[in-house]
Image (cartoon, rainbow, N blue to C red; front, side):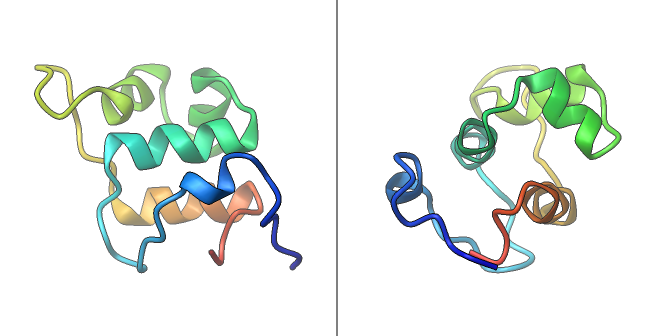
Length: 84
């Protein structure tokens, strides 16, 4: 699969090893790189908008949720961003 090294968001993306829990910024960056809304991103992995909002929420926010590494990897695969 071709890489997108020239994509404007690609230079800022943090490279994650499989099984590493993504940060809220990792989740936001992946969604932005794919050009998706939160609703569409959630639908791609059969999640809810509310769950996606929690994954992107700041870690100090009361509604923050950690995204499971498998879900992040699934989103990355389905959007053509994996392997990194």
